[in-house]
Image (cartoon, rainbow, N blue to C red; front, side, top):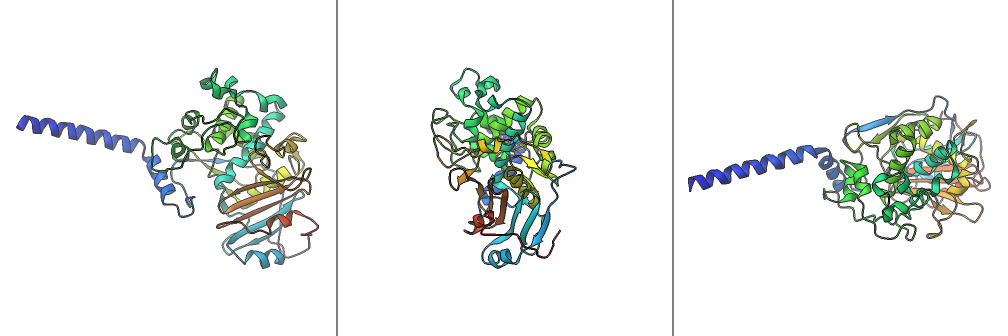
Length: 367
């Protein structure tokens, strides 16, 4: 009997040691998973764990920010923290709730994936336009010869990969969706996301689509996604560093969410697109590429390269929206509007894109 008790005790100790070791090895996952689980609005105020800074441009588009009483009259009714409307010359009308300004660091949440459409334009500028239509299996060796290898970057941008979005259960360590949110390997999670539909046949926004575009950009450019994003895009238009989430120390940058950047730089992203790929005098995207971004998906009309489309044919607006965040861009007027707050955005934001409805006027300068 004593021998049996000793054997059971040894097995219990070994099991406990393995369990503690496993928990310790995946501690960053559990930290982040709990933050996702306990988030009151679906997005944590801040995510712990490893991160990386993207460095800005030495010559960003200068912004001349003016306080506008018309915005103040609207924005103070509701849950708005920041509203900024600007044009390609750098002129900006704005309203900020107390404690906020142009340098306030804003977690882009789901808006982060909106960097991928412009990034692929920057890659095309150095390569060729057919890049968007080359099957990913030609670059992602793990998918070569497999059904999922026939999907293209254009289909990934259109959310037509056929990959399952999956239910988000943050505390399930075996869930690919949870692994994309918390680690420990964003690429492995994306590569093993189940294929629910034939590529190109079904619209379903999925975090895996963004992370696969990041992996593909990394393989094409032969450098880490963080380096590609910084060198090809962020360092060519932004004015402040941005902080991105890594899946593990010295690991992969999240492409699908959670980039923390100054409010002015989220607006600069919109203005880059509104100006057909120019940031001041610097051409970042090929001429005409923004027109491709506003081309509607053949399967899901009203959706472009990672952006919802609004407006009429020939005057499409690109809309990037997630809980508490919204950016709308009008290439035909050269304007962009950034809103940061809580809950649903106000209905009057898109009127700011029209010079006829919201004309510039001289007001008190903020910056």
